[in-house]
Image (cartoon, rainbow, N blue to C red; front, side, top):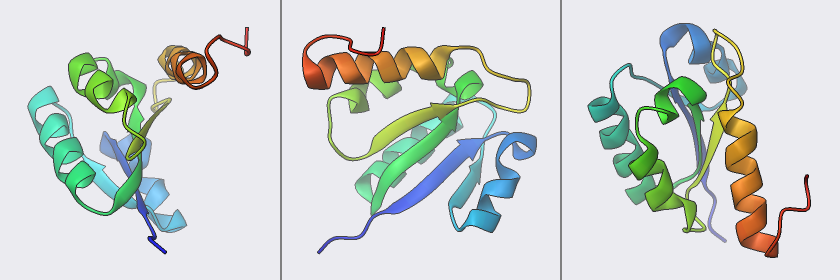
Length: 105
């Protein structure tokens, strides 16, 4: 049985509290650092990667690269500055891919 870890990527103010929940926390601000972190985690034992919507907006190609893979699941979360709606849009795309149509609308 394979056990996966979970990670959170974002600015310090948005993600530092996730370490108290036992998640691995990675701080990043620019797109180059974020892509390196995601690629490294994807090759490791991380099955879920949470990333702030603001950072995900900077790396759409990287997010799309992993969208069609079962592991890791990349889930967008709001940052300290609030919700942009990108996380819900990403969820809608994933549901549509899995089911064949968007049942959430």
